[in-house]
Image 1 (cartoon, rainbow, N blue to C red):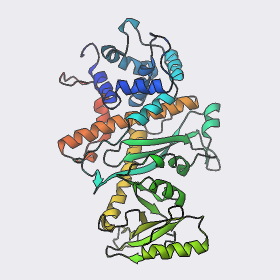
Image 2 (image 1 turned 90 degrees about the vertical axis):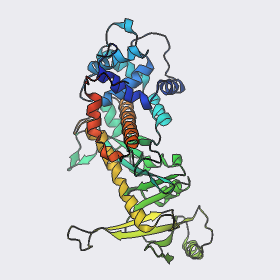
Image 3 (image 1 turned 90 degrees about the horizontal axis):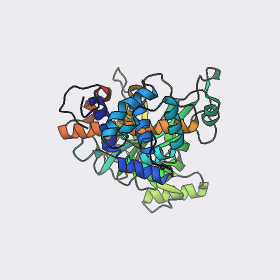
Length: 414
Protein backbone atom coordinates (compact mmCIF):
# COMPACT_ATOMS: atom_id res chain seq x y z
CA UNK A 1 0.00 0.00 0.00
CA UNK A 2 1.37 3.40 -0.99
CA UNK A 3 -0.39 6.69 -0.20
CA UNK A 4 -3.63 4.88 0.41
CA UNK A 5 -3.70 3.01 -2.90
CA UNK A 6 -2.31 -0.19 -4.33
CA UNK A 7 1.15 0.24 -5.76
CA UNK A 8 0.15 -1.40 -9.04
CA UNK A 9 -2.41 1.38 -9.51
CA UNK A 10 0.24 4.06 -9.06
CA UNK A 11 2.51 2.39 -11.60
CA UNK A 12 -0.30 1.73 -14.06
CA UNK A 13 -1.68 5.24 -13.98
CA UNK A 14 1.82 6.67 -14.03
CA UNK A 15 2.40 4.91 -17.36
CA UNK A 16 -0.81 6.35 -18.76
CA UNK A 17 -0.18 9.90 -17.57
CA UNK A 18 3.52 10.03 -18.43
CA UNK A 19 2.67 10.40 -22.13
CA UNK A 20 -0.99 11.43 -21.77
CA UNK A 21 -0.90 14.30 -19.25
CA UNK A 22 -3.96 15.78 -17.59
CA UNK A 23 -3.70 19.15 -19.36
CA UNK A 24 -3.76 17.41 -22.76
CA UNK A 25 -6.83 15.45 -21.68
CA UNK A 26 -8.58 18.65 -20.58
CA UNK A 27 -7.69 20.37 -23.86
CA UNK A 28 -9.09 17.49 -25.91
CA UNK A 29 -12.29 17.44 -23.88
CA UNK A 30 -12.69 21.21 -24.24
CA UNK A 31 -11.95 21.28 -27.99
CA UNK A 32 -14.58 18.62 -28.67
CA UNK A 33 -17.22 20.32 -26.55
CA UNK A 34 -17.46 17.54 -23.98
CA UNK A 35 -16.48 19.50 -20.86
CA UNK A 36 -18.61 18.78 -17.79
CA UNK A 37 -21.67 21.01 -17.60
CA UNK A 38 -21.69 20.97 -13.81
CA UNK A 39 -19.15 20.39 -11.08
CA UNK A 40 -19.22 17.14 -9.21
CA UNK A 41 -20.38 13.79 -10.45
CA UNK A 42 -18.53 10.55 -10.00
CA UNK A 43 -17.05 10.45 -13.48
CA UNK A 44 -16.04 13.82 -14.94
CA UNK A 45 -14.77 13.68 -18.56
CA UNK A 46 -11.05 13.56 -17.78
CA UNK A 47 -11.58 10.59 -15.46
CA UNK A 48 -13.54 8.77 -18.15
CA UNK A 49 -10.67 9.28 -20.62
CA UNK A 50 -8.21 7.61 -18.25
CA UNK A 51 -10.79 4.93 -17.54
CA UNK A 52 -11.07 4.15 -21.27
CA UNK A 53 -7.28 3.79 -21.42
CA UNK A 54 -7.38 1.56 -18.34
CA UNK A 55 -9.92 -0.69 -20.06
CA UNK A 56 -7.16 -1.54 -22.53
CA UNK A 57 -4.64 -2.09 -19.75
CA UNK A 58 -6.98 -4.40 -17.81
CA UNK A 59 -8.86 -6.05 -20.67
CA UNK A 60 -9.81 -9.09 -18.56
CA UNK A 61 -11.57 -7.07 -15.86
CA UNK A 62 -15.11 -5.72 -15.75
CA UNK A 63 -15.98 -2.03 -15.47
CA UNK A 64 -16.27 -1.86 -11.70
CA UNK A 65 -12.98 -3.69 -11.10
CA UNK A 66 -11.12 -1.39 -13.49
CA UNK A 67 -12.66 1.64 -11.79
CA UNK A 68 -11.72 0.34 -8.34
CA UNK A 69 -8.09 0.00 -9.48
CA UNK A 70 -8.03 3.66 -10.46
CA UNK A 71 -10.15 5.25 -7.74
CA UNK A 72 -7.58 5.52 -4.95
CA UNK A 73 -4.84 6.78 -7.21
CA UNK A 74 -7.02 9.39 -8.87
CA UNK A 75 -8.10 10.64 -5.47
CA UNK A 76 -4.47 11.27 -4.53
CA UNK A 77 -3.87 13.02 -7.85
CA UNK A 78 -6.88 15.30 -7.51
CA UNK A 79 -8.96 13.58 -10.17
CA UNK A 80 -11.39 11.64 -8.02
CA UNK A 81 -13.34 13.03 -5.08
CA UNK A 82 -12.67 11.00 -1.93
CA UNK A 83 -16.05 12.05 -0.54
CA UNK A 84 -17.83 10.01 -3.19
CA UNK A 85 -17.16 7.00 -1.02
CA UNK A 86 -17.66 4.26 -3.58
CA UNK A 87 -16.87 3.33 -7.15
CA UNK A 88 -19.63 4.07 -9.68
CA UNK A 89 -21.75 1.17 -10.88
CA UNK A 90 -21.30 -0.47 -14.25
CA UNK A 91 -24.42 1.32 -15.50
CA UNK A 92 -23.09 4.70 -14.36
CA UNK A 93 -19.77 4.03 -16.11
CA UNK A 94 -21.57 3.09 -19.34
CA UNK A 95 -23.55 6.34 -19.23
CA UNK A 96 -20.37 8.34 -18.60
CA UNK A 97 -18.68 6.69 -21.59
CA UNK A 98 -21.67 7.53 -23.76
CA UNK A 99 -21.62 11.16 -22.66
CA UNK A 100 -17.94 11.43 -23.51
CA UNK A 101 -18.14 9.74 -26.91
CA UNK A 102 -15.22 8.89 -29.17
CA UNK A 103 -14.31 12.46 -30.21
CA UNK A 104 -12.24 13.54 -27.19
CA UNK A 105 -10.21 10.31 -27.15
CA UNK A 106 -9.48 10.62 -30.88
CA UNK A 107 -8.53 14.28 -30.42
CA UNK A 108 -6.28 13.37 -27.50
CA UNK A 109 -4.45 10.78 -29.59
CA UNK A 110 -3.85 13.36 -32.32
CA UNK A 111 -2.42 15.76 -29.73
CA UNK A 112 -0.07 13.48 -27.80
CA UNK A 113 1.00 10.72 -30.20
CA UNK A 114 4.33 11.39 -31.86
CA UNK A 115 7.71 9.73 -32.40
CA UNK A 116 9.51 8.93 -29.15
CA UNK A 117 12.90 7.59 -30.31
CA UNK A 118 15.88 9.92 -30.29
CA UNK A 119 19.27 9.85 -31.97
CA UNK A 120 20.57 7.44 -29.33
CA UNK A 121 17.80 4.89 -29.89
CA UNK A 122 19.07 1.81 -31.71
CA UNK A 123 17.56 1.30 -35.16
CA UNK A 124 15.51 4.51 -35.18
CA UNK A 125 17.08 6.28 -38.17
CA UNK A 126 18.49 5.64 -41.61
CA UNK A 127 20.74 8.61 -42.27
CA UNK A 128 18.60 11.75 -41.81
CA UNK A 129 15.30 9.83 -41.96
CA UNK A 130 13.27 8.43 -39.08
CA UNK A 131 12.10 4.91 -39.96
CA UNK A 132 8.29 4.73 -40.00
CA UNK A 133 5.85 2.15 -41.37
CA UNK A 134 2.18 1.89 -42.26
CA UNK A 135 0.01 -1.18 -41.78
CA UNK A 136 -3.51 -2.22 -40.86
CA UNK A 137 -5.39 -4.68 -38.68
CA UNK A 138 -8.97 -5.76 -38.04
CA UNK A 139 -10.82 -6.03 -34.73
CA UNK A 140 -13.89 -8.15 -33.97
CA UNK A 141 -16.68 -6.08 -32.41
CA UNK A 142 -19.87 -7.27 -30.67
CA UNK A 143 -22.58 -8.49 -33.03
CA UNK A 144 -25.29 -5.88 -32.41
CA UNK A 145 -27.59 -4.40 -35.07
CA UNK A 146 -25.91 -1.00 -34.75
CA UNK A 147 -22.42 -2.46 -35.10
CA UNK A 148 -23.48 -4.57 -38.07
CA UNK A 149 -24.82 -1.52 -39.84
CA UNK A 150 -21.76 0.62 -39.05
CA UNK A 151 -18.95 -1.89 -39.60
CA UNK A 152 -20.42 -4.52 -41.91
CA UNK A 153 -19.98 -8.28 -42.02
CA UNK A 154 -17.27 -10.13 -43.94
CA UNK A 155 -17.95 -13.09 -46.15
CA UNK A 156 -16.23 -16.13 -44.62
CA UNK A 157 -16.24 -19.73 -45.88
CA UNK A 158 -19.27 -19.25 -48.09
CA UNK A 159 -21.21 -17.45 -45.35
CA UNK A 160 -21.03 -14.52 -43.00
CA UNK A 161 -18.25 -14.02 -40.46
CA UNK A 162 -19.22 -14.42 -36.81
CA UNK A 163 -18.71 -10.76 -35.91
CA UNK A 164 -18.61 -7.32 -37.54
CA UNK A 165 -15.11 -5.97 -37.90
CA UNK A 166 -13.51 -2.58 -37.46
CA UNK A 167 -10.36 -1.65 -39.36
CA UNK A 168 -7.46 0.30 -37.90
CA UNK A 169 -4.65 1.74 -40.04
CA UNK A 170 -1.65 3.16 -38.22
CA UNK A 171 1.63 4.84 -39.03
CA UNK A 172 4.08 3.66 -36.37
CA UNK A 173 7.68 4.31 -35.47
CA UNK A 174 9.72 1.23 -36.32
CA UNK A 175 12.16 1.48 -33.40
CA UNK A 176 9.61 2.04 -30.63
CA UNK A 177 6.46 0.47 -32.15
CA UNK A 178 4.62 3.60 -31.00
CA UNK A 179 1.62 4.48 -33.19
CA UNK A 180 1.73 8.15 -34.18
CA UNK A 181 -1.07 8.41 -36.76
CA UNK A 182 -4.26 6.38 -37.00
CA UNK A 183 -7.45 6.10 -39.03
CA UNK A 184 -10.42 3.96 -37.98
CA UNK A 185 -13.33 2.67 -40.03
CA UNK A 186 -15.39 -0.34 -41.07
CA UNK A 187 -13.81 -3.51 -42.44
CA UNK A 188 -16.91 -5.33 -43.65
CA UNK A 189 -16.93 -4.03 -47.20
CA UNK A 190 -18.47 -0.98 -48.77
CA UNK A 191 -17.12 2.46 -49.57
CA UNK A 192 -14.33 3.67 -47.31
CA UNK A 193 -13.70 0.27 -45.72
CA UNK A 194 -10.46 -0.68 -47.47
CA UNK A 195 -6.88 -0.24 -46.27
CA UNK A 196 -6.01 2.15 -49.08
CA UNK A 197 -9.03 4.37 -48.40
CA UNK A 198 -8.23 4.75 -44.70
CA UNK A 199 -4.50 5.11 -45.36
CA UNK A 200 -5.25 8.05 -47.64
CA UNK A 201 -6.46 9.99 -44.62
CA UNK A 202 -3.00 9.68 -43.00
CA UNK A 203 -0.68 10.71 -45.84
CA UNK A 204 -1.20 14.49 -45.47
CA UNK A 205 0.21 14.27 -41.92
CA UNK A 206 3.53 12.69 -42.91
CA UNK A 207 6.69 14.58 -41.89
CA UNK A 208 9.56 15.50 -44.20
CA UNK A 209 12.18 13.74 -42.08
CA UNK A 210 10.31 10.41 -42.15
CA UNK A 211 11.07 7.40 -44.35
CA UNK A 212 7.70 5.67 -44.68
CA UNK A 213 7.87 1.94 -45.41
CA UNK A 214 4.82 0.20 -46.85
CA UNK A 215 3.88 -3.23 -48.17
CA UNK A 216 2.59 -3.73 -51.71
CA UNK A 217 -1.06 -3.67 -50.58
CA UNK A 218 -0.79 0.10 -50.04
CA UNK A 219 0.69 1.00 -53.41
CA UNK A 220 -1.31 2.87 -55.98
CA UNK A 221 0.01 5.69 -58.08
CA UNK A 222 -2.42 8.13 -56.48
CA UNK A 223 -1.42 7.01 -52.97
CA UNK A 224 2.25 7.44 -53.89
CA UNK A 225 1.57 10.89 -55.27
CA UNK A 226 -0.26 11.93 -52.10
CA UNK A 227 2.41 10.60 -49.75
CA UNK A 228 5.39 11.85 -51.77
CA UNK A 229 3.79 15.27 -52.05
CA UNK A 230 4.37 15.83 -48.33
CA UNK A 231 8.14 15.72 -48.77
CA UNK A 232 8.49 12.51 -46.77
CA UNK A 233 10.81 9.85 -48.19
CA UNK A 234 9.06 6.65 -49.28
CA UNK A 235 10.17 3.03 -49.53
CA UNK A 236 7.26 0.92 -50.75
CA UNK A 237 7.07 -2.57 -52.07
CA UNK A 238 5.22 -2.95 -55.39
CA UNK A 239 3.99 -5.96 -57.31
CA UNK A 240 6.83 -7.49 -59.29
CA UNK A 241 4.57 -7.37 -62.36
CA UNK A 242 4.44 -3.55 -62.26
CA UNK A 243 6.07 -2.24 -65.43
CA UNK A 244 8.67 0.40 -64.62
CA UNK A 245 10.94 1.69 -67.41
CA UNK A 246 14.68 1.22 -66.81
CA UNK A 247 16.22 4.64 -67.38
CA UNK A 248 19.70 4.00 -65.97
CA UNK A 249 21.35 1.06 -64.25
CA UNK A 250 23.23 2.18 -61.14
CA UNK A 251 26.43 0.65 -59.66
CA UNK A 252 24.64 -0.59 -56.52
CA UNK A 253 22.27 -2.76 -58.58
CA UNK A 254 19.28 -0.40 -58.44
CA UNK A 255 17.98 1.56 -61.41
CA UNK A 256 16.39 4.92 -62.13
CA UNK A 257 12.80 4.89 -63.29
CA UNK A 258 9.67 7.02 -63.37
CA UNK A 259 6.14 6.60 -62.02
CA UNK A 260 3.57 8.02 -64.41
CA UNK A 261 0.04 8.73 -63.28
CA UNK A 262 -2.83 7.02 -65.16
CA UNK A 263 -4.20 10.35 -66.45
CA UNK A 264 -1.17 10.77 -68.77
CA UNK A 265 -1.91 10.00 -72.43
CA UNK A 266 0.30 7.52 -74.38
CA UNK A 267 2.06 10.44 -76.08
CA UNK A 268 2.64 12.14 -72.73
CA UNK A 269 4.00 8.89 -71.30
CA UNK A 270 6.65 8.67 -73.99
CA UNK A 271 7.61 12.31 -73.50
CA UNK A 272 7.79 11.88 -69.71
CA UNK A 273 10.01 8.81 -69.99
CA UNK A 274 12.43 10.63 -72.27
CA UNK A 275 12.44 13.70 -70.00
CA UNK A 276 13.14 11.48 -66.97
CA UNK A 277 15.92 9.70 -68.85
CA UNK A 278 17.59 13.05 -69.53
CA UNK A 279 17.08 14.16 -65.94
CA UNK A 280 14.75 17.00 -66.86
CA UNK A 281 12.14 18.28 -64.45
CA UNK A 282 8.77 16.49 -64.47
CA UNK A 283 5.28 17.82 -63.93
CA UNK A 284 4.42 16.38 -60.47
CA UNK A 285 0.78 16.14 -61.55
CA UNK A 286 1.80 13.61 -64.20
CA UNK A 287 4.92 11.77 -63.03
CA UNK A 288 7.65 11.48 -60.41
CA UNK A 289 11.21 10.14 -60.66
CA UNK A 290 11.90 7.02 -58.56
CA UNK A 291 14.58 4.47 -57.93
CA UNK A 292 13.87 0.73 -58.02
CA UNK A 293 15.56 -1.96 -55.94
CA UNK A 294 14.90 -5.59 -56.88
CA UNK A 295 16.21 -8.64 -55.07
CA UNK A 296 15.32 -12.23 -54.49
CA UNK A 297 14.87 -13.72 -51.05
CA UNK A 298 17.00 -16.83 -50.60
CA UNK A 299 14.97 -19.90 -49.73
CA UNK A 300 15.91 -22.43 -47.06
CA UNK A 301 18.09 -24.36 -49.48
CA UNK A 302 20.01 -21.18 -50.22
CA UNK A 303 19.66 -21.53 -54.00
CA UNK A 304 18.17 -18.04 -54.53
CA UNK A 305 14.86 -19.26 -55.95
CA UNK A 306 12.75 -17.49 -53.34
CA UNK A 307 10.31 -14.61 -53.71
CA UNK A 308 11.21 -11.59 -55.83
CA UNK A 309 10.96 -8.29 -53.92
CA UNK A 310 10.54 -5.05 -55.87
CA UNK A 311 10.91 -1.78 -53.93
CA UNK A 312 10.32 1.75 -55.16
CA UNK A 313 11.79 4.75 -53.35
CA UNK A 314 11.84 8.52 -53.63
CA UNK A 315 15.53 8.46 -52.60
CA UNK A 316 16.97 8.66 -56.09
CA UNK A 317 20.56 9.41 -55.00
CA UNK A 318 22.16 6.01 -54.34
CA UNK A 319 24.95 7.64 -52.33
CA UNK A 320 22.47 8.71 -49.63
CA UNK A 321 21.04 5.18 -49.29
CA UNK A 322 22.60 2.29 -51.24
CA UNK A 323 20.33 -0.49 -52.49
CA UNK A 324 21.49 -3.03 -49.89
CA UNK A 325 20.79 -0.56 -47.07
CA UNK A 326 17.28 0.13 -48.34
CA UNK A 327 16.59 -3.58 -48.80
CA UNK A 328 17.53 -4.14 -45.17
CA UNK A 329 15.46 -1.14 -44.08
CA UNK A 330 12.35 -2.49 -45.83
CA UNK A 331 12.34 -5.50 -43.53
CA UNK A 332 11.96 -3.14 -40.57
CA UNK A 333 8.32 -3.09 -41.70
CA UNK A 334 7.93 -6.35 -39.80
CA UNK A 335 8.24 -4.30 -36.62
CA UNK A 336 4.75 -3.06 -37.41
CA UNK A 337 3.48 -6.63 -37.41
CA UNK A 338 4.99 -6.99 -33.95
CA UNK A 339 3.25 -3.79 -32.84
CA UNK A 340 -0.10 -5.10 -34.10
CA UNK A 341 0.44 -8.31 -32.14
CA UNK A 342 1.20 -6.29 -29.01
CA UNK A 343 -2.14 -4.54 -29.35
CA UNK A 344 -4.30 -7.50 -30.26
CA UNK A 345 -2.61 -10.31 -28.33
CA UNK A 346 -0.79 -8.80 -25.34
CA UNK A 347 -3.30 -6.07 -24.45
CA UNK A 348 -6.65 -7.25 -25.79
CA UNK A 349 -5.97 -10.98 -25.57
CA UNK A 350 -6.07 -13.57 -28.39
CA UNK A 351 -9.49 -14.19 -29.88
CA UNK A 352 -11.20 -11.61 -27.67
CA UNK A 353 -13.80 -9.22 -29.08
CA UNK A 354 -14.18 -5.63 -27.96
CA UNK A 355 -16.62 -4.72 -25.17
CA UNK A 356 -18.63 -1.94 -26.79
CA UNK A 357 -22.16 -2.48 -28.06
CA UNK A 358 -22.48 0.66 -30.20
CA UNK A 359 -20.31 2.11 -33.01
CA UNK A 360 -19.29 5.30 -31.16
CA UNK A 361 -18.23 3.29 -28.12
CA UNK A 362 -16.30 0.85 -30.35
CA UNK A 363 -14.33 3.77 -31.78
CA UNK A 364 -13.79 5.21 -28.29
CA UNK A 365 -12.50 1.84 -27.08
CA UNK A 366 -10.13 1.50 -30.05
CA UNK A 367 -8.70 4.99 -29.50
CA UNK A 368 -8.19 3.98 -25.86
CA UNK A 369 -6.21 0.92 -26.94
CA UNK A 370 -4.06 3.05 -29.25
CA UNK A 371 -3.35 5.59 -26.50
CA UNK A 372 -2.42 2.88 -23.99
CA UNK A 373 -0.21 1.08 -26.49
CA UNK A 374 1.46 4.40 -27.31
CA UNK A 375 2.14 5.14 -23.63
CA UNK A 376 3.63 1.70 -22.94
CA UNK A 377 5.72 1.74 -26.13
CA UNK A 378 7.07 5.16 -25.20
CA UNK A 379 7.97 3.92 -21.72
CA UNK A 380 9.81 0.91 -23.17
CA UNK A 381 11.66 3.04 -25.73
CA UNK A 382 12.76 5.58 -23.13
CA UNK A 383 13.98 2.86 -20.78
CA UNK A 384 15.83 0.99 -23.54
CA UNK A 385 17.46 4.15 -24.89
CA UNK A 386 18.63 5.11 -21.40
CA UNK A 387 20.10 1.63 -20.96
CA UNK A 388 21.81 1.73 -24.36
CA UNK A 389 19.97 -1.28 -25.77
CA UNK A 390 17.60 -1.87 -28.68
CA UNK A 391 13.94 -1.44 -27.62
CA UNK A 392 13.24 -4.79 -29.31
CA UNK A 393 15.11 -6.46 -26.45
CA UNK A 394 12.47 -5.31 -23.96
CA UNK A 395 9.55 -7.74 -24.03
CA UNK A 396 6.25 -5.91 -24.38
CA UNK A 397 4.29 -8.71 -22.72
CA UNK A 398 6.64 -8.66 -19.75
CA UNK A 399 6.37 -4.88 -19.48
CA UNK A 400 2.57 -5.14 -19.40
CA UNK A 401 2.77 -7.77 -16.69
CA UNK A 402 5.01 -5.54 -14.58
CA UNK A 403 2.61 -2.65 -15.00
CA UNK A 404 -0.38 -4.81 -14.04
CA UNK A 405 1.28 -6.68 -11.23
CA UNK A 406 0.99 -5.64 -7.61
CA UNK A 407 4.55 -4.81 -6.67
CA UNK A 408 5.73 -4.70 -3.06
CA UNK A 409 8.83 -2.59 -3.56
CA UNK A 410 8.23 0.85 -1.99
CA UNK A 411 10.93 2.35 -4.20
CA UNK A 412 8.48 2.38 -7.10
CA UNK A 413 6.55 5.58 -7.73
CA UNK A 414 4.22 6.99 -10.40
